[in-house]
Image 1 (tube, rainbow, N blue to C red):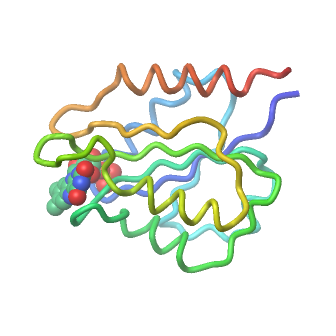
Image 2: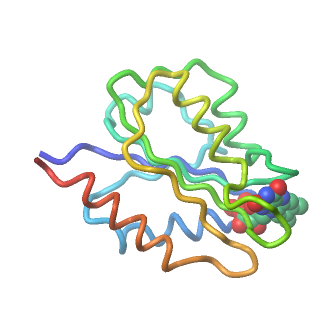
Image 3: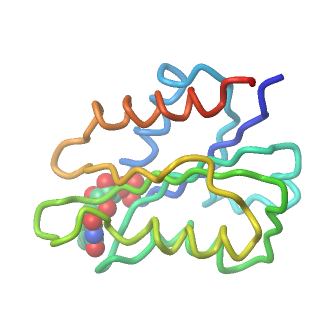
Length: 148
Ligand SMILES: Cc1cc2nc3c(=O)[nH]c(=O)nc-3n(C[C@H](O)[C@H](O)[C@H](O)COP(=O)(O)O)c2cc1C
């Protein structure tokens, strides 16, 4: 049986939303999609054993504001759940190939007792989106979700 999965995303100008919209054509398993700007209750996560987080980096290495409010504003318990993180940002103008959002999300998810399913993906999204990189990461997700 395949684990039930949810996508939680935070997007300020719609880029992350566009990435999430492409997931059904990339993933071999079904996902329910939740925009954290709609402030889902922690109980909404109960049916899912796998959570996929997508959010952008703002400020200077800061987490997108709706995702920040979602993760910081409530006590999440992710015991027995696995997660994977895709952060959006831009390589150009920044020294690092990690943008910042991922580390903040990971900090919260680790503290909540979740287990990472696969390595995170830092998706270059400005000025162009790294769709090839997204496809490679989704292939890793598909493999990790294969029933054993
Ligand atoms: C004002 C501003 C600040 C940004 N700060 C960062 C940053 O610190 N690090 C980074 O990697 N990307 C940064 N970005 C790039 C955004 O993460 C990128 O444009 C992303 O696709 C936005 O996604 P969203 O529309 O879903 O929020 C910034 C973009 C803007 C417009």
